[in-house]
Amino acid sequence: MSNEELKANVLLVDDEEQFLKVVSQRLGMRGLKLETATSGDEAIKKVDQRSFDAIILDLVMPGKSGIDVLKEIKKKHPDLQIIILTGHGSVEAGVEAIKEGAIDFMQKPVDFDKLLEKIAEAKNKRFLIIEKKAEEHLNEILKSKPW
Image 1 (cartoon, rainbow, N blue to C red):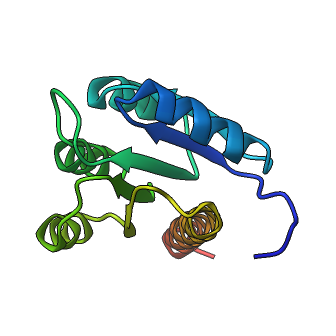
Image 2 (cartoon, one colour; image 1 turned 180 degrees about the vertical axis):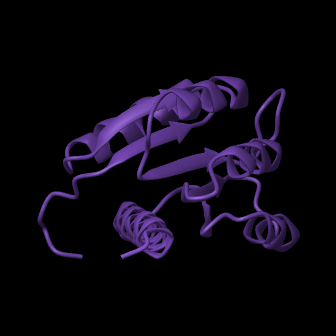
């Protein structure tokens, strides 16, 4: 990825506050606008209140697991792009996350360059989905008019 700043709104969800602080600082220095959440419920509230280009979601948290949060967010906001991040990764968990709609599954400690690439991919993919929906909506409007 180039050294250009990546302009993206990102929600970082992890129950480890020190991890949130370090990752937020590092990603913030790259031009990302970050919000954080320390629980699945807090993340879901934030997603319902505003739009994000990417969500980085911890798999193992007290209360709702990352998979539960992923399912709930995807049900209400199917266009949101979610990257699962975990220190307790297994192949099975990764496969389940992808089946439930995550765009990727990454292990801690995180490689920041790869994470930035994934965030850029997420932003581009979401933009294309929104653009396609807008085009479909416009076509429906045009077809409904008796020109």
